[in-house]
Length: 166
Image (tube, rainbow, N blue to C red):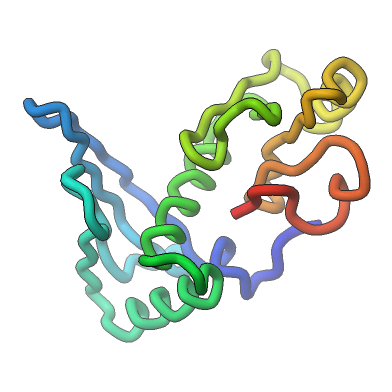
């Protein structure tokens, strides 16, 4: 089941992601924020810790983005930063040319750790293979229609986001 059009992961996206490693080892990154494909601002981080930097070219859209982030992540210290992290992950995972998956021991939510299936396998083929060969490792696959890693077996595989879903 796909996410509804009103979900922030459907409404917002990122583009033009760039990062560079500074001489002191920090990673500085930035990207454009988009609402239904239209730019409304920039976000970035200098790798020094703290909240991300935002520069909204459309103040109303910027406030709408912050409101959506608070609604999606009410307990987060900086909800818009969490939403940006999710949007970057969605963009990166959807750009892969192979099916991504992870096991319970992988740290997908914290570090983005994932594995890639053999080239040419469909999502359905990977789900079947993982369910057969690795059921005890709680496998999940990246489902682009849900913008989430979803379980390959059990009740959670077809109804709603799986554990750790953005």
